[in-house]
Length: 405
Image (cartoon, rainbow, N blue to C red; front, side, top):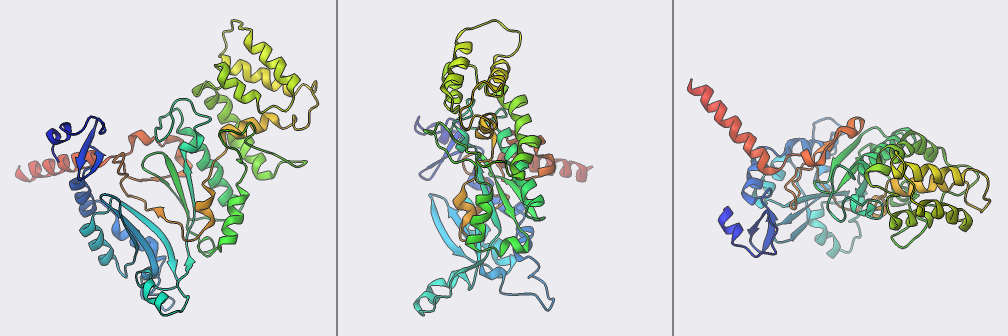
């Protein structure tokens, strides 16, 4: 689709969009580019080897039916869904991807039988079609943080709010390794507004739904919504060691040195009133409100000043309301703690987008993120389809020039 045709589209189309069929897609996402991407760059062999978990060889313990029982789901142009695709070898997978050119590839569980033949098993009356193995997965979306970020909302993301995803990676990755003993963990950028986590250890893949729910609940601290004044409840005589570690090693420092300033959390009355609503003592909130409504000149940032005033007031011992003791920690957790999509992690049959897909709304590749260097990850610098093919063209031109010398 050329640029003239795009510019002749309706005004309500994306400004940088191209019209393909009945769908408006960004110029970074182009069906012809996608076909070339699948033909030249998509790591199909590596994907198949990963999904096989050693069952693609000739050793005696190899389960040759294993990878053929894995569900792949394709989303084609115009939102046509193809569920329960299965492939016995890498050639089948590669040919199908090249032929169908899916806008999105999702990966599901390994079933007890070939998912492509599930209807035949259903008609036989034998209830044998059931998921038996699946990576433990986590899905974290920046849109779930809209009540604590003021720079963006919805699907938009920038370098001011993306560090919330970085913090989520640090907290979850450390707990998965140190508390659960998992080692084979893959973090992937979703291509637009979040991150996905794949825990690939054998013991993780074989967890039941009940066990997955227990792992997910281990991380469950955030329990509020937009209408809740108190979004986190830290109960009990002492915090769980996992929460203590997360707070002291990651959350507190991030809140005080980055988020407080980048989101200007105390800068306006609307914003600081949301925080005052989390404090269970009306006398304490009244005192703080009085200080903040009386504007006094200060060389320090107003967010830093007001946060210190809040901490000093709540920790002074002057007020005795129940729950006040942990209020500072609860505020920090409310703003910074990872917000997981619990249902994704609880069930084996949940689909998750494959790594190295291309997001149809941004054209960006779903690239892996190294958790040891996640501070360095910049979602705005992730390559797009058009950038990749500019580089390929430049590389091809250079090669031709060198061969012509």
